[in-house]
Every structure is written in C-alpha cells, then in structure tokens.
Image (cartoon, rainbow over all chains, first blue to last red; front, side):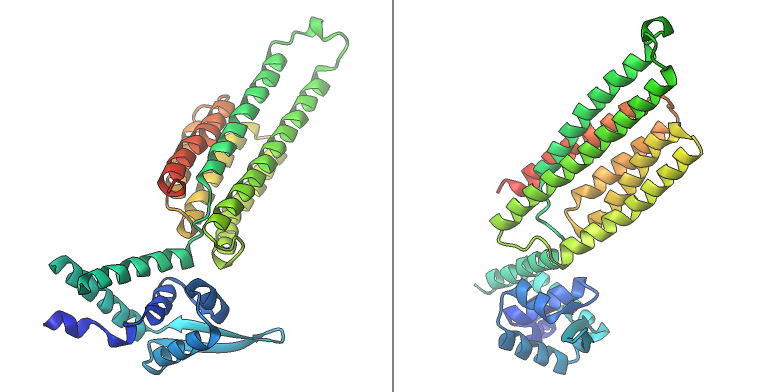
Length: 97
Length: 211
C-alpha cells in the first residue's frame, strides 16, 4: 500500500486541509480572511495553523498595519510539495475504487 | 465508504481554492444587460451620425455645420457615459443579489483583486484614447477601446469566472480586425460591447447562476 504512505496525516482534517487549499492558490492570506473563508472560530483556526506551522508546511508573518496587529500565513515550498503529494494520493485512491 | 470521503475532500479543496482566489458572485445577467444597453446606445448613435451624413447645407437653415458636428460628438460622449454608468450599476446590483443568495461577502479580498486587475489595462486604454483624440486620430478610437477592454477582461479572468477570458479574447480579435475597416467603428463596437456581452452573459448565467 504505497499510496497510503503518501496520504499525509497532517492534512487529514477539514480545517487543516482548508488552510492548505487556500494558501496553495494565494500569495498570502491573513488570519481574518482565513477565518471567514473556513467559517471557524479564532481558537480553532489558531491551533490548527499552529500545528501546520510546527510541521513547517506554512510560515507566519506578524506585522502591524497602523496599530492593528496583522498575521499573515504563507505556504512553504515543503508544504506545497507535501500538499501536492497528498492530493495526488487522494486522486489515485478515488480512481482505483 | 472511505473513497467517498476522499471524493468529498477533493471537491472541498477545489471549492475552497476557487472561493479564496476568485470572485465567483459575478452575475451573468449583468453582462446581458450591459450588452443590451450598448446595442440601444449604438442604435441612437447610428441615427445621430446618419442625420449628420445626409445633412446638406441648404437644409441647415442657418445653423453652422461645424458647430452641429461638435454638438453631436458631445451628445455621443454623453450617451457613452450613460451606458457605462448604467452597466456598472446593474452589474453591482445583480452581483450583490447573487452574493447574498450564496451568503458571501461582496467586497472582500477576491473582489478587490478583480476590480484592481480589471481597471489597470482599462485605465491605460482610456488614457491612450485621450492621446489619440489629442492628435486627432479619431478613426483608431473604436478599435483601441475594444482591444484594451479585451485585455482588461483577459487580465481580470484570473480572478473571476473563467468565461470572462473568452469574452476578452473575442474583443481583442474584433478590435484588431476593426483597425482594417476604418469607418465601421460603430458596428464593431455594437458587436464587441453589445452582442458579445449578451452571448457570454447568457452562457455564464446558464452555467453558474441557474442552480
């Protein structure tokens, strides 16, 4: 079962999959936009983003716009590569059955 | 059982990629309306130009022909501005409705990106047309507007429904052809801004709106 090895456990959750999907097609996305697109709470998003950050699939840039803190998320090259592999593994699993 | 879940995952990924990077609440119907306004305006413009062409000097009853010509040019510019305002207003209203129905925000990152990328080529085209008018090269204005509008559509299509790309390419082609048929600018305008808008608007309406 070599295909199953390519299924990445880090992406095996609706919110983490969502974060990766958004970051894969956007240069960068801020916290609030992610929150709105995924329809999740602050804490929920933060914890899932944290776990992706720990695996070094995404990176975080914190800055201030005026006085407001702004957190931007960016996909890393490793994250992109792993996400692609994950998707093609999913596709193979679907077409095989 | 499991493969069904994976299928759901894939469709979820696709859906969220589209929603996050493209403005999908663009209404097809607004394209149709814009096309209809353009055709009506082209008819009015055609009539006005005809009166100018068939006017002979004896029937002028004392009116200065050059003054009449500039009068008609101002009228035509006024009509054009009215069409643009009408088209944009109905486009916004219909897109607001569509966004509400889908429970999405109208003014977000994706719609801002769409507007900015649409306006860059359009603005350059507008300035270029003013330059053409400055040098009195009136006959190239119609093709130039079509070409730059087409480029704006192609550029914007990356950030909204893909059909806009083909509307853009069609307008670029028709604009280039129009450069070889000087004097028929109005007909190409009617085709590009009128007929093409109605055609692609209908296509988009049936493809994306009616669900």
